[in-house]
Length: 497
Image (cartoon, rainbow, N blue to C red; front, side, top):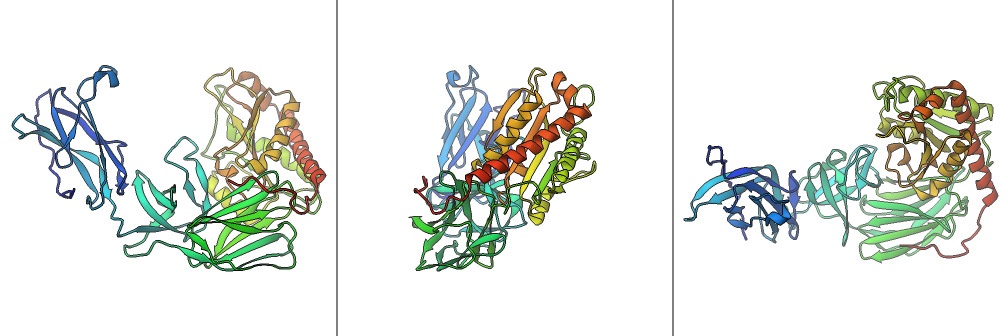
């Protein structure tokens, strides 16, 4: 079906019983759709009407059993077909008389574009903190993130809903990218693909490196698998032309690296680590060469000489939680962080602070600062709050399962303060837990919304006790890492997915 771009303007009855109360796309947001996608619409009006959308497509009235007894609800779905055209236009709705003349019409507030598969829409990532989301879900922490991307990575866009573009990664694999971290390219570009060159593995005094030559900056996704510890990196749009892998002198953390061609457009790097506890990695591009940096464990598993970053949550205009008595999270987190700093410095650690005053510091800036400072570990300190004053206890949070041991070590020690346990929480989608460059954990010390917990939180002596327990947690994590020792060569294959 060929769709005309010209749509009627609102025109209809002005009396109280209007045939159309509301008419909109579902979701009610600007959309880009490609062939095979579903355009969903809903109209509310008088019952028993003949309603159409686009160029006369019918909209049936829903049975009241499906609308909790409400009548006059009309819905329809149209599957976009090859050759359909619609250029960022609102959707037209019409109510027709028995003789098919128009009784009333309306247009959606949101606009819809049908994409032409013959003219691919591409974009490139911009800025230092571009990232992909798994889907369109949102909460106060944002959408569930797939991972960060380097700048100038080329993405093939196949749709849009609201403020996010849909990205085709590979056959049957997609992601979503926020509009504010990409720049659209003009039409006419080819969808990026690449053959892989022969790659190399090397090391210097701090890192092991994997370098894979490509023809373009392709999107990627990474995961640290456990038992045995293995870094897996999928490069989308890449096909193997790797005829050898050169492993040079200086490699200390990587084992026998290899690859798999999972499907024609997904190239997987399999990078075994020699230690059970991973100490971080980063992925980026040098030109069009994909570079993976794998950090080695500290030479000595002790606080002396270790670089520990402490993040005092919130600050300045970002107050955080506030109790009924007026206690503020930003004040408490800084007080605890300063006490932890003294504890760690007395143990010989070098401490980096994301803030030392009541200044407003954006979380994105904190992540970039830590990326520059390259700590060995990060502890982010927060104060919890709940809608119920009965909820209380301490908890720790981590995002990646490889960093769970750090969060668990801190949690076990925080329980030694006498605080009730609220749990050790994984897959936490918070900005300071997002970096893969170093083990990190967030400590929600206690609930400011609970009177008993608040009494402890505002007590300087209890703040000191929490700082001592956090230091003990870091020491316990280091002891456990030291006890594990190097694993040498892999004893068994990782459970790859």
